[in-house]
Image (cartoon, rainbow, N blue to C red; front, side, top):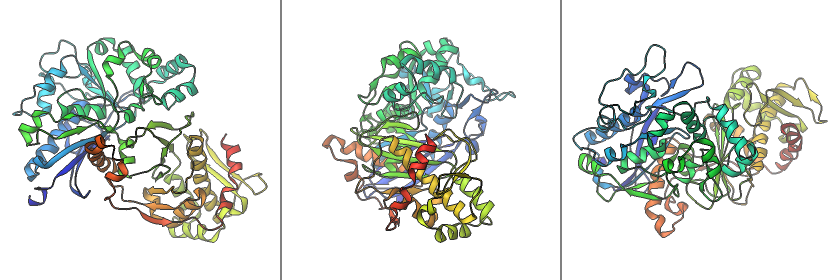
Length: 550
């Protein structure tokens, strides 16, 4: 218990798809407490798989909002039982799975403002009657709470759409048509219409369940919903997470009236005004002061999305790029002058309101690398690395692009190989094939990043994470293709840790202290690979890929 006492700190929360996590970070930026509640394991009564309910149509995917509330109750009670000293918490912030939405029923604000410290949160926010969570059909009966439901039900719908939902194609096409097409919407909001984006989910709710929509007093993202629990009132949506809704004009950071009107009536008043991501949105609710011993002056800094929070946790700076080399590959970019396209996403930057971040996802990541390893290198990463070590940078002009599943960026499938003479060929020698795969993957990332406005700067660094970041030979190719050094960093709980960092930044933001100054005591990333002299020859062959990808 003593180790949790007497350390002034900030808390970082993460309301993710499969669990709720928390970390406590002290003034020296050391993580000294962490805990989590896993939905499938610890809250079996909600009947989720992977934290969600997949409906019979295979497209609709939702999560029970009260499950998230109960998970918060469990963690706070565990912290209290462990002797955690809540009186030392200066501020807290958090992250939520992006795009998910929560629908607060009329009267919910009064319930939030009058919570009793003698009861748990979920006991006060749920309806008074008991409902079975999941019937045999697999569709949750929590979908609709009738407006006349007795008790203190706070939610118009209790199974809320999340980022995995892909049931809103019709609404996406309607939104794009309203504003003049997909590219026009991307220029306006940072992304073309995506099924998981919140505006399209709201449009579906309004069209299919207008009664529930009309009885909704506030619509939150998962992030602002979680912040609302701590505030005891409706928290505003922050600029960065608000960028993932197809509703926010990213240049001037206000709601697009055209997009709002295309989705549902009276939507602006249900969303509230968005705020900068570093905003202190208020002091913690008296409920938490009385039940857990938080200080009355503990600040709540605007919660944001999990991807923006991860950018903060990795401490990206202007010109930096983070490459997550996992099952799928993801790029996080810090941008000053974004160029929205039909691929990828542009979000407002969570730690610098004058700049932006971009996100690019590639499906054919580690699974593709593992497949080639198994086919050509005897399922051995050691043999795979030998192929990279024994072949020349630039692969003597040979290029390969490998998409065994339909790629996101660009939309293409199949394996395509080109000789130095730019002729498509059916096969390469095994070692040439392996280098072609890795160089082709990283060339694709660089070219699509440049399409969004990314440019390598003198101080640019790449932060590599994920399983493949442990392979130095793969990282060497990454450094050579981008022409910039590659670093590795411990990104365990990056959204949580980034949220705690953002809480510290929120406390200091009134003095215009840059985020980099606030986190300067955090552990430095480790250099893993520097560009090899002459590596520019690798990049000379990108024109072939540009023609192919476009």
